[in-house]
Length: 522
Ligand code: KIV
Ligand code: ZN
Image (tube, rainbow, N blue to C red; front, top):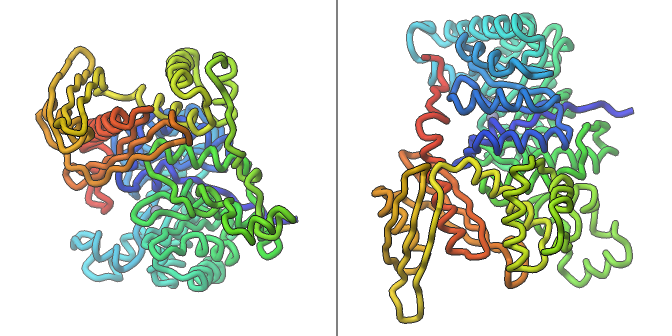
């Protein structure tokens, strides 16, 4: 018998804090549904007090899935009340409250004299605030998680005091974040072991690990934490998250599965849903998965060298420690063609993890037949991209109504665009060094605003002449990054759509996604 590890997925909260990865509410709900299929134990759906959009996302997810849904709250009454309200419809609600415990954070965030004159007084204030927060959360919800932010750099004796107080106040999970990704595996394991020795009644709560990847050690630290006694792991799909990201769910789950000989633990994850989930998150966030990424990268199961290929043909185990099928990577194959009907499309989308209602299916079917006319053979990845694009487009404010580009070897590239937002229409033309620049210039001219482009890439989604092109682009406004993604068989149109999507993200999210002050001054 092996012990069960709880998988707490924070893709929609910590993951969404990746630069530019802001997701719309329908995109989050779609990902939450897929996380439920993947069978994670808890989804951290957002930080309700931080904006109306965050509140709405948590509320909608809580009303959609039946697995655990957590909402983040600082150790503040108004945060906890917002979390409670957002979680009203959840079948298994969890309030996740946190305080900062390292001296760096305490001195940085609690500098004000009202928190105490000395470090030691400020530390006691943090304990009191944490206890009050846990008690308040507990009055609404049995399942309360407490996190000691920057526990990785917190002195072990003080950390034990805070965690003991949180458990005494009713916390059922105590999370030990390595917020800055500073610790080394042996050190992090020793921290968990020290807590188990020092904290009275530690067995009343589940110990959780939450590791950031600043030194590339998030997964190794999470596994070391489990070996030290933790039984919940907080992680994100594709390892996305603030700065270098969080521990990658797929790597943790497969490490536990493949190395059960050394780590006698198991999770409830349906591993064959890993690839679908990875692709969905990458599509919606516009964050490409690097080809050599473990478990879900395009090359994760590719065997290039002759020796490896020969070995694989003779016996798979020579170079493969897990099979692509185990994580849901199937051979690229033609799945549908122009004669496929709505029913076939819907069934395949369901297999790929997407749920569509009749209206969405109709919209998608017409895009599907357009594409099938152009490219004859439709692959799973084409469908994923079409589907992702269609969920995203459904939430667009500004849309591309018309695009015409003139170019040639000796011509000056010129673009004409017509944009629409509800009844309002803008039309403009502009030239540029190339067709894409001309389109961007025309869009900016139409809106009378310029948006600095920080990165821009175009790639083909599948192979062949008629392949769908995907443009990914990032703009930065007032220091905040916004991603955009566009898809079309015409890469210039895909680029225009990506630019418009990023502008929509600015308009939807500016001043509402992260106005929050992570200190306690509110
Ligand atoms: O990294 C961190 O400390 C966090 C907490 C808010 C749990 O994300
Ligand atoms: Zn974090």
